[in-house]
Image (cartoon, rainbow over all chains, first blue to last red; front, top):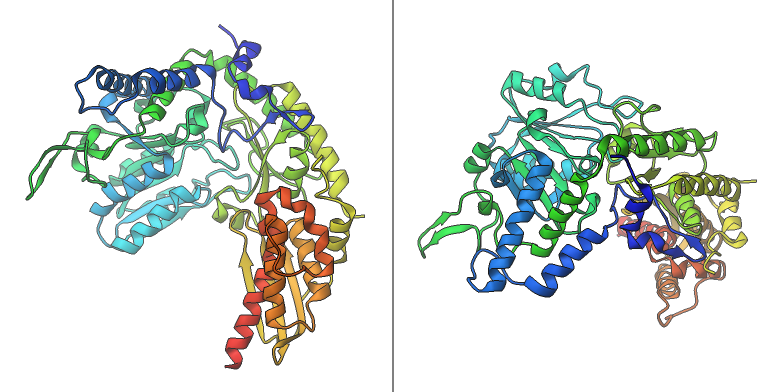
Length: 406
Length: 143
């Protein structure tokens, strides 16, 4: 196998769009990736021929919906190399992390420690601050280097015997740096702590072998990996899911309800109260099926080749906010150009059809650490091509020319 | 073609940076952030009665925000708190395309092209919002 880029791009009808007169060059994949025909068709097929609620009905449509929903869970489980019964559907990464902060976090005692890092997305900071407010835990942050990688030199000092959880991004949504998971897991195991990985930026770039990582929780979103919005996953070890109390109560998460008490359903249903986002889950299953068919070494080589082209083609004044090389990095490229604001750059690039993201990327503590108000970010997906990179580089040159003060 | 966002009038406003800086011993100094992008505006203000006697601004933000702060700096001294609130409403209406309760100050006409970019409205409004908050703080201190 190899990467047939034309065939991949043909799967994405939105890539034929124009912004004004310019063809779309979509480089905001770290925020939301586009959706292929196979996912659109899976959602359309469900909504137009099998739409019904799951788990409770016995009519034909309900049976089909229940089976499709279960198959989606099995597809996601294959992508993660885990049992389907350990895959909890959530609304996204944020919902998944909040579920852990409630279900697992609420079992912690005052003085227990949770360790995050300076490069986390707000979704992996705020839930732990809220837990600190509720339970008096101590929240600590691992530092980052000037290159935007985790600085693990101090990890044995930061992770003490009071540490109960290390919650870290698998890859940074700003710098693209990939976390050395083994060192994190070793530090956690040494003190009996659990490890949660925020995989939102990792899952769009190939299957994840969770057992090989050795972590305890894994959270990610569908919309960054070619699936619909409003669906995400929390994976956790079976024993943890069984020991954690449910966070939301309602229908679909129970075995028996009386007016006095409730017996909960077994995981994963215990954590999926109410009617779930069924079509979205089916879309996520279709996305993981589609991704499983890719030649990932070829895709990774393609993504990194384009990453290198962008790193080489940035304006000479640009400061790369992230690793300078390709080692242990995702195709997420942030940069700052002195004197130019990211939103002004993004606005000018938009007129050329180039969709970028500018700002703090929901990582304000990292911006503070790196002494930046924000960055401009180009983030790649497997369908991006050399034309996208050319449009970016040409557009940046034009933006610098337009915005530089006389 | 919606490509007038970085027209000369706006860039000239931004480059002019009228009343950029600080003033000594202001009656109030307020900093507000734009949660969309982290833009940050600080405004120092001194009042004489109900009117602005002096002001200065510092902007860590985009050109639109810098330009709007400069436009505020060019027009706000001598205005009353009510006039500032009124012009903020007028600017919002201009950007939203809704019926204007009043005309924005002359310099704000340059921002009319921003109307097509909803996500950037906050960049233009932030300096006036900050000024209004600074006036309120100064008035509260007097009381």
